Image 1 (cartoon, rainbow, N blue to C red):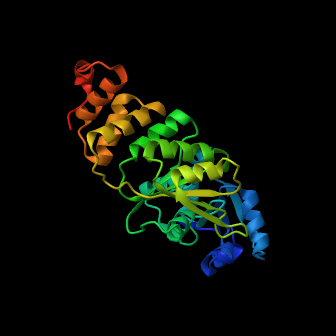
Image 2 (image 1 turned 90 degrees about the horizontal axis):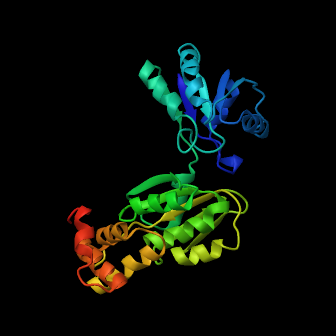
Image 3 (image 1 turned 180 degrees about the vertical axis):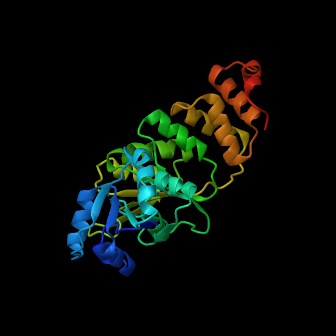
Length: 288
């Protein structure tokens, strides 16, 4: 059997009774970082010294078949450094291989940075999406944010503290300066901090530098009814941030219900000062 186990995301007191029992009895543990697992065993006062097998992003595909065969005869505990394996952590390819091979997969639930951030955010929790880590590069990040600009559900992202300010700046440009955002830093740890505000406010706050593990919770889009002039202004603001005119028109259309063609033509006319300049260029953009 493959047994996925959630480990504390910061506070050792969150280690469940079932996790402690498993750590104390398992003979094989597949761990994202074996050094972290050794530290966890010592910190929890567990004397068991199981066989530790490294299972991380760079070797998981190659290790999966071997571990699945081991799991036919011996239970294997799977750990990531913090939180639940497979959720922005190693484990998915192993579970996929185990399911395909008919090997039982079970779980020891526990701490989750995604759910902790969502719960404490104060944003709607009835429907949400987890988007993982935002891309490192500006252009890729903007493209990823554009894909979720019209998402109505609350969204949870992970982010590096070194890229937080840049990501929040891009988020404000693409999703709107007034979009409600919550940054959760160091959840369950001594320096836990939950910062709430608009995308612009939090981008300015993060510019001074932030440390620790970061989760970003973003309010879902709310359909707005705008007049065409205001919609065109939003399109042009997106263009100024580096988004193509056609893409900006599509984004504002999705968020407001205004027609993509009308937004594009009016915005292009505003930019060029030439009435009707958009008609030929716009032919490749699908109609609303």
